[in-house]
Length: 249
Ligand code: 13P
Image 1 (cartoon, rainbow, N blue to C red):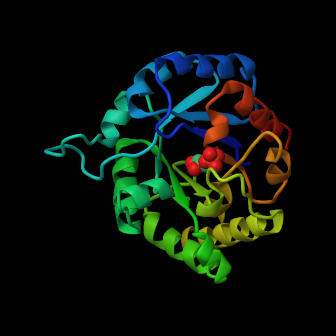
Image 2: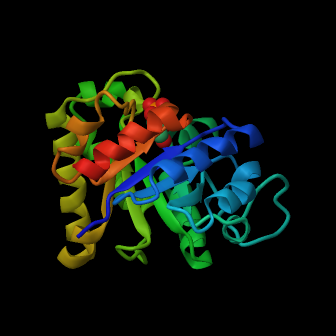
């Protein structure tokens, strides 16, 4: 059985005042069936992990460097994230791919560094609107999956997030059939590459404009094991009903 995962990606939002949101989530969902993850910005990681400590919430980071250490001013290594209290790191988010020119091979190298340090990785895949309109979605996702996911994963250390770029922060969501098609495809590709037992235990998240109003129908799709949520994860009052919908799915 795959444990459902509700993951909140705070992106570049949040200061210490927002730690209260994590506290509120921890209180409201102390007996949640789903795993709840918050990925705050790096400066908040340590305090967020203190707030979440021994509560129902795990903490993740949003990026890491591909090297273990060294002369890389401004960068943060996987080991540092772990040391600050993170147990996951999100890699290959489309905003990193676009803003920092990250390609599949960079994502793969970062994932290898993160896994070596003992972090779990959430690797993001997603197509542009033009790629979907040209009917290239599955080719794009297949290529990103082959290029971004390293060989040495386990079902426990890898989570895959399907985030269509045109659905992020736009309020637009693919149809239920489109989400189902991509998630089935990802599961099949993982099976081909890692074998049935491993592939069937890897969690697949949908991300892109997940809100309290659409969460339940998205979570009813086969092979959707949770969500990677941006805007609606910033406030406990918005994220809470999404977690509740996942628990009920
Ligand atoms: P939104 O939920 O704000 O669309 O963001 C999705 C996302 O990019 C999560 O990583």
